[in-house]
Picture 1 (cartoon, rainbow, N blue to C red):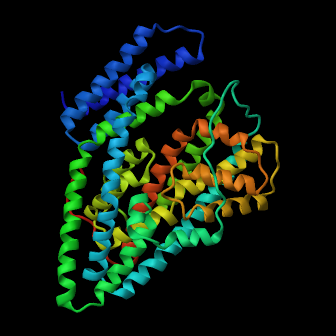
Picture 2 (picture 1 turned 90 degrees about the vertical axis):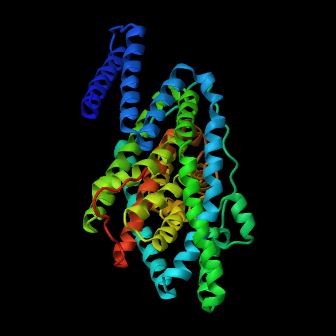
Picture 3 (picture 1 turned 180 degrees about the vertical axis):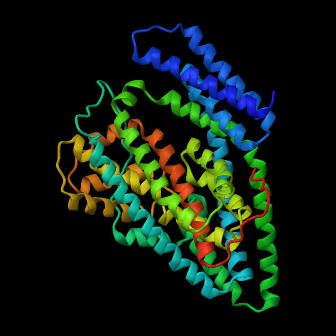
Length: 457
């Protein structure tokens, strides 16, 4: 059977399976559980056959996500034991980030670009980031005001969630977070932006040295960068296990009651993010004449990893490698992508503006459009310095809610489905940053579209 026929078989079985489950859930017709289970497993069997024939790592990652959903639905208690696999994968990926950022930035600045170009890339990136994130903020506000998803929300009886600890951040702390107090400490905590700042300054200092002093460090950095990219390729073979486990844990953890009561909020977020991609990111891609099909192939694996693990950092090494294959010079990729992880969180910005108004709606507080904009801008600014904080979006939301006198109980409701929302916003963050690297490369006149087929796995 050819791959095309297998794909059509999977599509047909997926349609049939979805239809049977919808009939069972929304009508009085009872579908035997054996029929439901059999239809799912036949569909998954088709996916496995397709993955074997395709032989692509991205396909295996997508398949692992499907298997993870099935395990989470049918064996929720067992699924929680799989968390160790996702943690192993995330830990391995985090070991790559600091050395790969340091090496690629140092080589890019000291070896291939002049210091004026570094300054140009800096201000161009910031301008682009702020324009796009502001549009994301507005789309989030429009979406939540249209759907009124927070109106009438009540917590299910007995529902309890522990809110993360929050500490309000002043503007001084936000700025100080950017600059590394201790490089080793930044590496230990996984703070991307201080690592970038240190590496940029180190690269500039190295560029000022005479050739005989500069060359040994450049050779070391080039060797380190290539080694870490090979290291990434080795770790990615474990990705299907880590990603599948992460999905299984998430699905097994979520309760059906809280998911049903907050389905409107979830659909509002996913719909708003889809609108953002179609109305903002797609036109930007068309304006810079980006090869859309190749771009989708390049980001499919990083976005899949980000979606399942809800971690932008886990996708960073592979995103850097694939964007370089797409034709973006390494010096631009290594500068724009990690910087964007702090300044260009499109999905997170949209989510925060949407979630803040949701909290007010759930509490029965009517906010004027100017109050909503002020709250959204506050959220956007305070989110800049906490990219490495676990559940950072919730921490920021809690601090802002307290500042504006909003109750915290609606945030408890959000926490119930935060993992599902985090999947979507993290995926959009990665997509937006990958696109930003191409935008800056095109702006600098250094983007070279790859000729022929490119293998991104």
